[in-house]
Amino acid sequence: MRPLLFICAALLFMPAKFTRAEEKKTAQPAADFVLVIHGGAGVVGKDELTPEQEKASRATLDAALQAGHSVLARGGRSLDAVIAAIKILEDSPLFNAGKGSVLTADGTVTMDASLMDGATRQAGACADIRHVKNPIDLARLVMDRTPHVLLTGEGAELLAKEHGLPLMPAEYFITDHRKLQLQRVQQREKARKAGDKKAQINPLEAIGTVGAVALDKHGNLAAGTSTGGMVNKRFGRVGDSPIIGAGTYANNLTCAVSGTGHGEFFLRSVVAYDIAAKMEYQGVALTNAATEVVMRKLTEAGGKGGVIALDAKGNVAMPFNTEGMYRGVIRPDGKPWTAIRKD
Ligand code: ASP
View (tube, protein in one colour):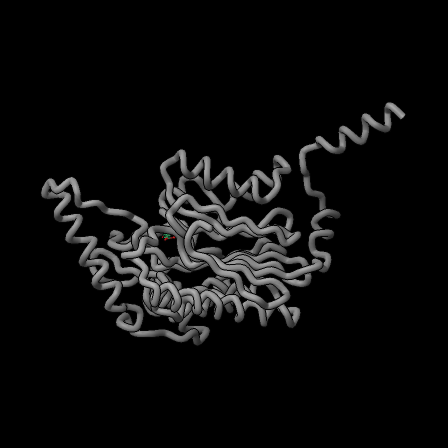
């Protein structure tokens, strides 16, 4: 009896290591399917978000959830559900991705996106994109049609052209709202440089990066993120969103993660992969891993933002250390749940 107890105890405390057999097991049909999305973390005070704007944003989140749900409900891949949801948000002028992206310091739009398949650990990403209507489609092309993971600028847009992705003139992406926002931020920056201590600059006032993570009926996870980056960013700046492991990560053995927040901090803390690594090496459950990385490590490092995270059992975690994070979840019953502030 004693040796048996000892073996049971040893098995219980053994660090989680994943074998090929377990890897296969995670690809067994899951009981459920789940889609989780975000529309950015940051400041969501009454001045920044009127009730009408809130209603419109939530309706768009609902539409994105429904688009991904219809892919998953018919047995489609998590990767396709993530793309379907993100494209709705990229096409909406309300979010900081695709149309409605924030503006760089010189008034232009440059976009980044990435995608990862948890079943194969294949990934694709693009950065410094100016004309591709849906950068998430280009991330998919990089993954499927090239031996590379990340393509930037002209080279990435050439790939889009070669494969007939819709391209748009630069003006398509620029909205009046983003022009005013840039003016406001630049005026405050000027005032601060002139010594006005009250002129605060909040790097996350331009909330709205988008992302999605999904678990399909086949038990496969996927993650994707798309953004215009941060308002008033320097020409050439690339954040965490197109960087696999920082803003996006997916692995059937652990979890799928998409981040939003101050990209420089997410890059230095390798946030998305850190959550997966805690699960893989320490056997920590999803919620604890995501909470520890965002609420303790990222916060202590001075980084603001949040993540959506999903494991292969359908557990969901959505920690954020900002005033709010646009977020939503949909499960097989097809009823979308959305929230913006802390609930
Ligand atoms: N993480 C994005 C970036 O730094 C911005 C955001 O999520 O709001 O480019």
